[in-house]
Structure formats: C-alpha cells, structure tokens
Image 1 (cartoon, rainbow, N blue to C red):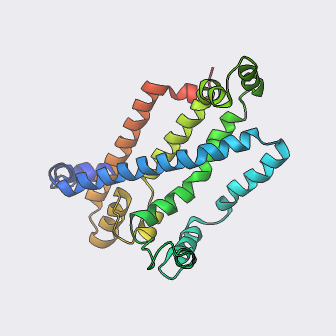
Image 2: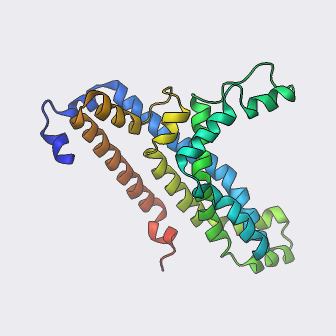
Image 3: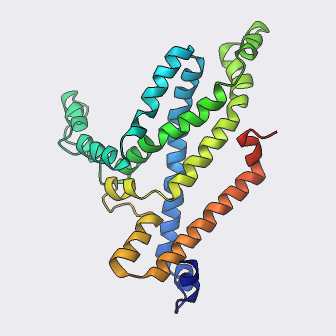
Length: 245
C-alpha cells in the first residue's frame, strides 16, 4: 500500500497537501483523540485511585467490573449504547421522568454520542494503566507524610500524585494512539456527522475505489502516530513509563 501511494499518478500526496478538507479531517481526528484521552483520564483516575486504596479482595471484585466490558464485542457495546441513548431510549425516558428536560435530547448520531461510545470503550484501559502503577506505590509514604503534619490533600498532591505520573503518561499515550485509528464507534455513534481519518479511508476504498489516496492517508496517519511517540519519548521517556531501569 505504501508503494501504491507513491507510484500512483497524479500523486495522492499532492491532493492531501492542497485540499483543505483533508487537513480538516486530520484536525478532527487529533481533536477526537485528545478529547477522549482527557475524558478517560478525568474519569479513570478517581476509579483507579479508589481501587488502589481498597483491600485486595474488594479491589479484585471491582477490577472484574472494570474489565467485564472487554468480554463483550465492541460492536455489541455500541449497539447497546444506541438503544439506550436514542430519542425513545432509557436515558431520555429517565431525563423526562425526572423533569430535567422537556423534550428528548439528541444523544446519538452526533459528537456527544461518539464521545460516550469511545470513552466507554477505552476507559478500562486507562483505569488498568493507572491502577498498575498506583498499586505499586508504598502506602507507608502517605502515612509518613500525614505523620509529618501533611493533610490528606497535601499528602496526595505532594506524594501520591507525582508517583502515579508514569501511569498517567502510559494511559494517555495508549488512549491517544488508539483514538487516532478508531473506526467502529465514530461510524455508528457519530451517524456520519463526525468524520475521522479512519472513516475517510474506508469510504475511499469501498465507495470510490481510490486505493492510492487511501494508502496515502493511512501512511500519513502512521507517520503522525510515530511522531507523537517520538515527541512523547523525548519529553517523558518511554523507558521510564515502561518501568525500565
């Protein structure tokens, strides 16, 4: 496919460079990945922190609840969300019953629906990445900080949080890279109103048969992903994130 992208005439890379709509598609793709990463971190950190402080038996039971979605296919999970979030679905019915809204709210086939589906799909990975690091933090360090006069908040901010940063960095890296190539959830939950690079590649292959342009888009996406990894490595060091000594 890489060879095809360079040998096709006219060059698909010239079209990618000159057509503003493709630049917009890449901007949308990176926006989606960044937003989903931020949401997973905001939701996953408190859960992982709670798991790390829980007794081993309770933590193991809660971890089962976290990883259970992995036992269900991604396609089935997305269709379940479509049923729950549609205008006549359970979520809108609940909002109407509580008098929080006056009419059904559009929760699917838009950006919100896509974000809900992607966050639900990727959140367990973020939680597991954070939990793996947090569980290894020595609790005596927190108790020592408290014995020296630190409040719970200061012990968390000055001791626990800095030690958990490798998990934050690893989780964010995985969320961002996976989000760049996500296809099923944007296609189903976005309803065609959200168009990341993966959907454009699929359309070029199945609708127009333009394999050269699709190959060029895929190659540019790979290069962008590698550049993200290189910059991440320069700033945070992947060896440190992986726990190498």
